[in-house]
Image (cartoon, rainbow, N blue to C red; front, side, top):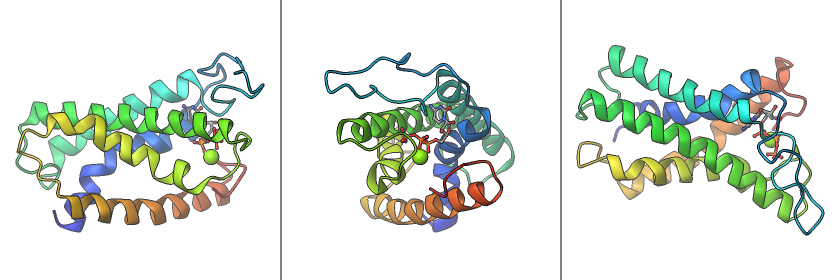
Length: 173
Ligand code: CTP
Ligand code: MG
């Protein structure tokens, strides 16, 4: 895929990942529970409302992209675009939560930075969840995944700094 197409394709996952910063709630997914290691299962940064808002925001973004942007998953039927957007978003939020689970297990406090889990796990799980629905209409090659990993890494760093500067996030990552 061309770079523009590639970024449009992954946009629902990006939007899902970003939405909770603004739309996140209070009740944590782990309900405050701890594991044997006396650390939280996921931590206070992963809320139920944030998770749902992320999945919805990414799916709604996918709907608007499907209606207005011809380059968005060009050859896929309309319904498939929505379904793929939903699974990209669900995968992004699940990967984000898995990342927190890993961070807590290796002793990184909520909100502290962890390069691979913060920036790339959400992408990997988003691709994994949505992959079964590509059905030959979305031609994502291995090289595209590599390009996405690199682009996502830098965009994630950039957007978090912007969100911090705009006082949406306490920390610049
Ligand atoms: N957020 C949320 N619910 C989610 C994911 C994120 O409410 N499922 C909100 C929280 O306010 C969170 C913010 O978005 O603090 C930023 O998300 P992120 O950087 O992914 O979480 P961290 O606070 O850094 O937590 P962790 O260390 O567990 O990654
Ligand atoms: Mg964080």
